[in-house]
Image 1 (cartoon, rainbow, N blue to C red):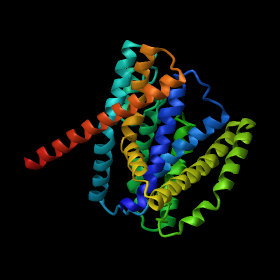
Image 2: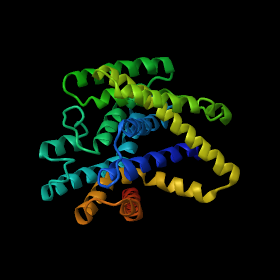
Image 3: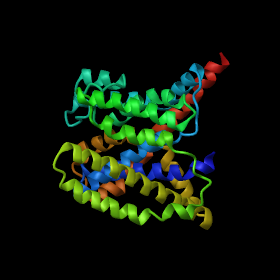
Image 4: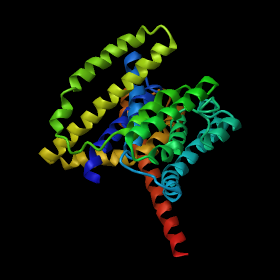
Length: 330
């Protein structure tokens, strides 16, 4: 199993570094970071995260109530406590310092921890993404109840209409953007048997396509045009990043670069904690140091953020293991 998803770990690590170490860190630093290209690429990064969240369950069938409950338990115990702590920390920080704008009211906090803030906006900053994934995970057993891929696609399409309806009546429009990519992940067949060389053929075309989409995005005349460009570019970026992940996997296997493999897998293992807590860590350092220089950002702030994220992930893992053992002993 691990061998089949190693490249996905690499992709998850790269995506985390972009969000934590560039997109959000750039907003607190002195270098220019935001333009059409980086904006569209960031949407593609989040699309890749979303695709991977579905892709990991593509070959699974959830055939009954017990399996559905087991799926929910696994997802919630792995993610929800960290999500709850992150949202709570955002709200408490805002009470003491209004620069922490991510969650600004008790209503927003309550809807967020209930996982429905994307249905009843405004969704919180940063943790909105996990809020959205909670909704997607909620409907996943409905899709995976079907073994036939065509029937899964039909059910996924029907559920898309439901999300589109929510958006039409005030829901967060990001639901309509990321949901098709999540369903595409759920519908993806296990392709580890194909030869890797065939995967790289379209990579240059993907790069060219992304550049073209960036040009079109800057000239989009309405919201519908922007939406379709974002969805297509999300798929293009996802394909490109998965290809890069496979290239890194091939290099580490062929050249036996063990340190790179271990480092990328370590980054992947802390990616959830890093995503959920980086803005709090970077925000506190920003309130102390002011706007970061490039050297401060990458020589101190980013390493500190990654180390503290590892500590949070490790402590949570140890606590969760202890609780499971204690309950089992009883």
